Image (cartoon, rainbow, N blue to C red; front, side, top):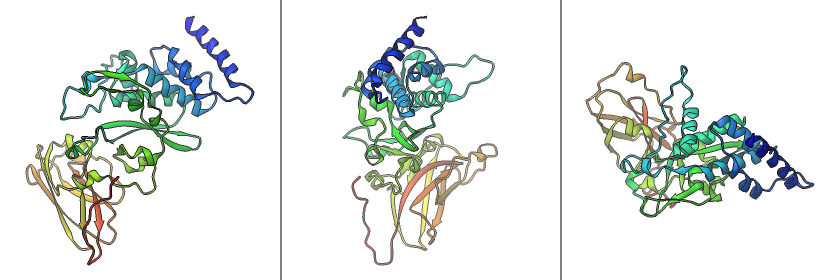
Length: 341
């Protein structure tokens, strides 16, 4: 009954806020969504979006509820400093039919009122689904400080893309909600609007996706981190790779050159291959019928052809594990490094 009166009161306030032009100020949405409390994503979405008409207003309301009510799980993030706390562990599902992962994570986050980045992103995705607004969970690399370790250039963060007003936009509820102190043992809630529907040109300065299509840029610039290391996918951890060659992420070659790739992995089975062109998908067919190739040290030689693209993807045991930037030189060209980005 209290929720019904609250929703009715909110509807009246929204009508007053519309004025004569039918526009609802974002500041009004930001202020009022804090009052909603519920236990399931479906009910929560119904409450926070009911007063609004446009998808942009609904997304603003969903995003601000999450940033105002979900805290960052410092304890989970600090369990293992060597492996980023990307993934949210959902509570056990006791139902007879297993729910989709996004929904299980979203319900867990709502119960706990805290999450790591994966929980924020999956909750946002689930709420968008209930609002019939297309969205995606995006995994990739986030620059997390001035003294970042270039050797850790790989997937360590999760955020979202959302489709409104006939276009895709980028946003990060985790970073918009607040930040930790310098010691990393205290969470400080502080809304940062820079991470809501951000211009892709600005977003890529500290967010680099595994799938470069989600940069939303026609020609995504490679980061300077490639000068020190190739980009590491989640599969890098899954296959237990502890060393690789080439060490740098930028390879310069001419058409006809052969490039040797090597990895040392903790798993015996699986093939190593290198491909160019569109980014491949993980295909773990080798898991069902393991193929032992060269033990833990695996190697592959790739020959540069006129059709070779600007990216080379290393695949180990069916998982995409590394991405290199390839600069194809013409005879006589000098070697160089990537410009700062």
